[in-house]
Structures are given as C-alpha cells and as structure tokens.
Length: 174
Image (cartoon, rainbow, N blue to C red; front, side, top):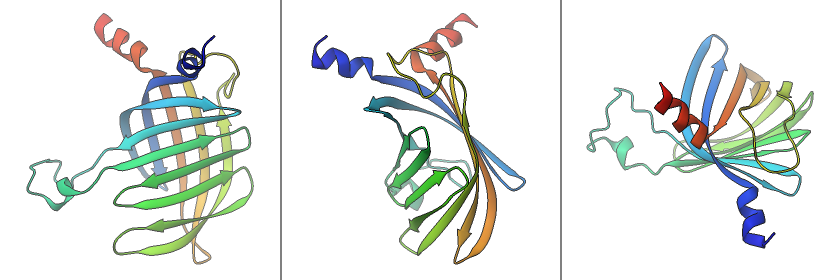
C-alpha cells in the first residue's frame, strides 16, 4: 500500500449530529466534517455553523462577516480534547473522573475554565484499528464546567457520526 493509499484509508468524510445539553436546555446541530486517524488518536474536524439570533443570514448582519469557527476534537481511549478556533477560541480537555484546565477567549472575554468529566463512553468497537469502515460511531461525554471555582453548569455532549456517502445513499432511497 502506498503512503497516499494508507492516508486515504485513515480519512473519511462524515455526517455529524451534535446533541448538546446544558442543564435543561438542548441544542442539536448537523454538520459535515472529516474523521481521520493518526497513530492511536482519532480526529474529528468540522466548521461550526453560525447561528443568527433571528435565523436569517442576510449579509448585513455583523455576524455574517464573522469568520467561521473551526472545531477539532482529538479522541483517545482515555481523553477527549476539544479545540475551537475563529471568532471564539477555546480549549477543553475531558478525562473520566478528572479535572482538566482549559480556556475561553473572544473579543470581549478571556477566562480560564475547568472541566470535571463524569461520563465518557463510545459505542463498540470505537476507537478501533483497521480501515475506517463503520455504520455509525457514537461518542458521549458529560461534564461540569467551572469558572473561577464556581460550577456554571452540567453538560452532556453526544456526537454521532455516519459516513457521508451512507447518509447520501439513505436520503436517495427515501
């Protein structure tokens, strides 16, 4: 296998459904992204959708001029690291039953934050070895977020990924 073939076998376009719950509030987003593997780590990369308060994208809004936020999730058997870069920059690390430091930065604010992860699980056989062939991958983690020693909320994130070509085939069959 050539280096290019090996790289292609470790990279896949995916459809991602992100279900985020904060206390009693729930937000669901669907994006297309990329899943790839380097060594023993998996990476999920996508562009975060820009959510306008009025649901419009009229081009005159200050938000429409903002740069998109790129999201990178690094996944290992014991840790998840979430990095966001764009108008908002943040870094959070999640390790089961451990406190981990991170930060949040925007034009208006900058502060350190800490997470305590109470749940971290994925469906079998994830993470896995061999080619990126699967019907669905699910990753779930729950955590408490602390800012200046104060708990600001309970969060649960569910990340569901399906190969982008599978998603397209299913839509065509309907």
